[in-house]
Image (cartoon, rainbow, N blue to C red; front, side):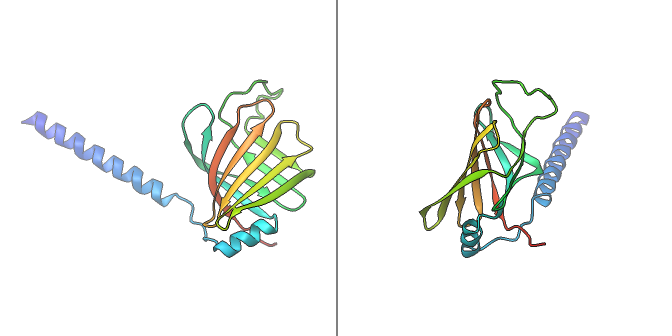
Length: 169
């Protein structure tokens, strides 16, 4: 009799815990004003946008959801990249606290291709960064995007997220 009560209590506790985690995850998701497909096209044509990473997919390993804000800010004259890195590095950094993919570039080339009316490819090659060879964005008209980064001394890595407009100051 007592054992049945304990088992029911454990099942009930687990159900409450699982529900709490699910509700917390839903409430902590980013609430972003959705851009229309015309706004997405205008943002891409202006070469000024923010890619906000929500998930990361390393070459070796499984997809991970990101719990902090990581982004790449693209402006006409500047790229500011602040992303985590999970994967294999072929050369250790001199400063071990310099993990992740963090850089600012002022010298880069940008190539924008329209794959179709619902998708664009934006290729960015930083000329003043020895580690990052290329950032390849696939941006869809619903505002979602993928980012593939090719590194010199690390495995490639992919990010999934969304595009935001840069707020005018």
